Length: 276
Length: 276
DNA sequence: CCTCATCATTTCGCACTGCGGAACAACTTG
DNA sequence: CAAGTTGTTCCGCAGTGCGAAATGATGAGG
Image (cartoon, protein in one colour):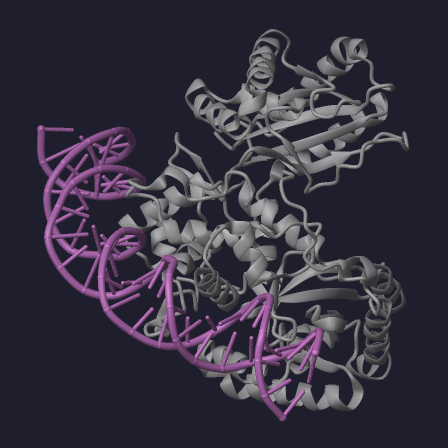
């Protein structure tokens, strides 16, 4: 059972299609670290009854989102999932634009500079540039860090409108009721910091030995909200440097990216039916 | 309407969860080439009625698979889709193993060497190595080529068991009834070729000016079926060279990859709950 | 060879969920 | 203001998805 995954208080929401949500939950239980899963394990992780899983895995296999090894009776993510990811990536022009600027900063600071998008209550790295230092933290594209405890996550939250932010914070608090105080305080602080200076800090908040700064990255024309961070091991990146030097530089990177995507010639819904 | 996408003859299959399939169809209409889509356009492409689309997009947005721009009222693939793709990629050890061998061959042949997985009726490039020649064909990871007309696709089909192959060919034929003859003949030929020599040819079958060879790549322990190809513009890669030199070399690459993944320490269903 | 496990699939009747036509609302355009 | 878009909400009906229990399918142990 993956934290928030379950159907929860959806009952009564006539708009919400439960069967779809459950099916996607099945896909979601697959992690990068583990191999193929059997129906049993999937049932355990999703908390759904076995027959339901049978039907969902069957359907997902038919559609190519799962691949089935009949010898071992286990499933893995299939071509459909891959394809979806590729298409999603292709639409992320930000990455291309931000990449060189991020690398530049990473070299200067000798730190890790990341670009992330939100996925539920995590930030998902979609790009990451390492400095020359070998002791960099190993977060590759695809890894996730918690929304509420990391600099990147807080920057993202700060970049939202009030209307979007409130329910999101509610969710976070509901998931980590024990750390409510710390989290809320951290976020509020981040919001203030970003109003004032454009970036926020996380000094040992995500992991005790890691420091970082974060800045929101709101693309023009409602093309989405992302966030940048710049971080590394605490003994290399002192709070003072982050605050006085790296933070402001990160903000500049964000501004340059936004500028570069200014007139993005966003093609809209091209008529291109038929082709594979 | 995307070719085969619709519900079709699913009626009667008590095992198939339609609502899930429809929801995934919604995700599927997003292409790499086009920007965000409105409900209307999604309805048009899926062939589903508007209220249904409303509910599905609502659900998918809630779950983070779509992101919504309320200003323009359009959707794009969201963090969930990205995350799924990353996890799927992470489970593709093949890529890591095959990469250097593929590049080597690409350099020798001065051609494009690709590794693909199946997605419905296409082969999806998951890795691609270019030779030094600038005139290489531009197929990046994430692009798709048709299953029945390409060397890679035919090699994949040939790698299936009879039991798996027959229904798949049926689907292809149903999708392209006009070219039935050509396709079936091409596949049968490929099967024979691969039995005999381990690779198959496609001389101008996918695009008139493109030639290529393909070889199936069946991983041990039922870890999945993939396919390799080696191809390029016809005036550079003559049929003779492909048949006598590149084909056999491609087969060797496939064998080396299978060998290297021989004792793959395939971890099964590690207990790792809780983490983000 | 036959238990007794475990795990996956199938059955089946019922309730409720998802469906979609039609009406409604929110904006643009001429 | 009328005549187009577009997206959302209603609401009654039917059919779909549900899940407890039964049935298979493998495999381990005696």
